[in-house]
Length: 195
Ligand code: SF4
Image (cartoon, rainbow, N blue to C red; front, top):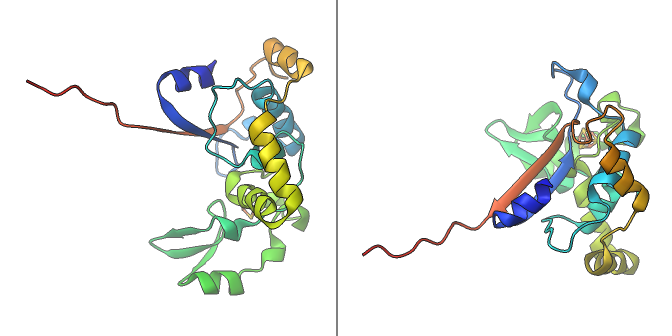
């Protein structure tokens, strides 16, 4: 499996997130709705091996599996580029402002997130919107902190049905054909001294 190969290559940590349904993408048929995204990540992230290391909030991974509900908090992972601070997140470009204070004050946050009814946010579950929500849950409540520690110590998520579904393939016969973003980080290789 891909995660085994990455760990074998010496990767320090992996980041995983669903794809975002950019309306300019030529193949719109590959993007998943929220229900299918949860199903896919339940297959991918259940029955985890001990050696897999994810450089992410364990509660965000549970959110991807449909085990938790979070609201989008895109100000928790804002985008700043040569144009300025991008409203409201790096996926949407609804204008720019010069400072983070202006971003917070001038963005109509109620227009964004799945609950807002904004069609651009309808199927979004990406890390830039929802991982900060999971981290906030961890550090602002005893329950969140307890759930995080529990997930870190015991979060292998054994699930026979998910294992069988993974073996059988996806709805279209290709378990990982949907867009999924993966980031890996690795230490530079140590080289032997010359001479
Ligand atoms: S739901 Fe997704 S697209 Fe919408 S504001 Fe949040 S991160 Fe951006």
